[in-house]
Image 1 (cartoon, helix red, strand yellow):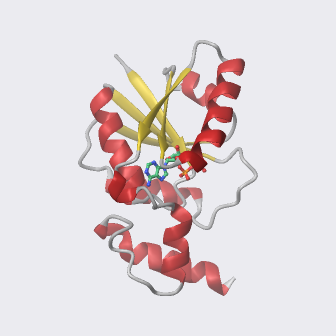
Image 2 (cartoon, protein in one colour; image 1 turned 30 degrees about the vertical axis):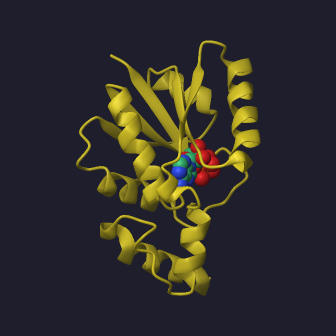
Image 3 (cartoon, helix red, strand yellow; image 1 turned 90 degrees about the vertical axis):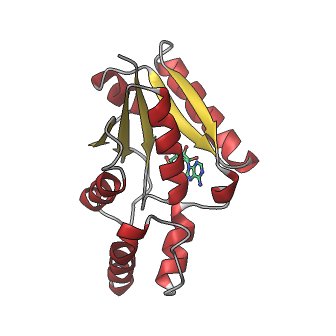
Length: 163
Ligand code: ADP
């Protein structure tokens, strides 16, 4: 069985992420979506909220599993039985960071490889921070996130502002 792991912050999941998830799920028998919090980034959405949103938007994709992991991505990959990391590339600006990450992971675990899927041009500008920013001003996010999570995204972003 061929498994892949798609790691990220997903703070929150966007249509750009979902596009990568659909395409990656076609390439492997099982796709593990891993919400990682080993970086210095502190998110707006809690891990439980990110898991919930990701599970809801992927409920129609049978070979997807959503997990969270506190530690190194390579350890997470091995724990879930995969040596294939999948990442998305939007623009040249992503490339330097992604290359560094992939090479670091290769140094840590030479048997693990990273595969890059290029963005769907429809979503090449889209990021979780764009969603957070637009939602915080009450702007229309229907082109950014799946319809079924729009209300929750507004609610959580508004909650974050009150803090
Ligand atoms: P991270 O903080 O690990 O970069 P993100 O949630 O921002 O996590 O992104 C996870 C992965 O999805 C990254 O490889 C990123 O480049 C990719 N990604 C994010 N948005 C898009 C998009 N609109 N199109 C294609 N790939 C994307």
